[in-house]
Amino acid sequence: MYYDFNDNSLLGKLDRKFGRYGFKYLTIVILVGMAIVGVLDYALLRAGYYPLSSLLWFDKELILSGEVWRVITFVFVPESSLNPIFLVFYLYFFYLMGTSLSREWGDFRFNVYYLIGYLGTLGFGFITGYASTYYLNLTLFLAFAILNPNVRMLLFYFIPIKIKWLALADCVLLLIDLIIYPLPYKIAIIISLVNVVLFFWRYLFYAVKNFFRRRKYNREMKAGYKEYEKQQMKALKKARKAKIRVVKDDEFYPNQSGDNKKNENSNDDLFGF
Image (cartoon, rainbow, N blue to C red; front, top):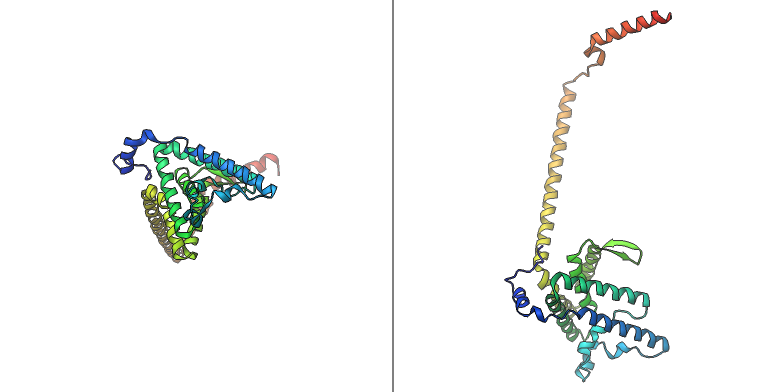
């Protein structure tokens, strides 16, 4: 596959040298943190208090005023804590993505991928003034979809769909964001997705190349089929002009038809008709 890493690449060399220091519980730590924040947010909101996430999410002005812990704690804020069912599915899917990528790449490479995405999200936050885990977790989702394109998921909890189509829909939404948002947001979005580009640029390059190659092949096949139909129509017109007569069976087998008549006469004599 084109997303496989060469042992001579920079990441391969770093993996050989520092791979033993990979933190294998990264997914679990983030998952537990999001679960705690999500449950407490739901309970506090139900009780009429401010959510815990208001003390944790990324806010550029508050960070520059001294609340530096927000630089780290925002990764533990889930996308939504208002719906417990959504929170459960969100946490389960995060666990599925994290453990799958860690198995596929190894702990060290997964740590590097998440770290690059985290730094990109920080860049997004300091450019726009606010950041969430949306783009960070989106990079995990895109990586998971590239590595496992045919895994089926339940859209709206009951419609089975392959994950590659969901990833394609997310890419379309990203393109829309890049079109409608002003330049600072465009730069921030690109920075937050830099880990996907660094890890999958070969795959993306060959995917685009194969797409155009397939389109060219389909055009050539379509043109060839049209030419074949044209030749068939010409042959049919020539046959009609030559007035080719269809030979009947009794003309082609005269003896057989005579024998049949003889058999019919004998049958008439036998039964007395």
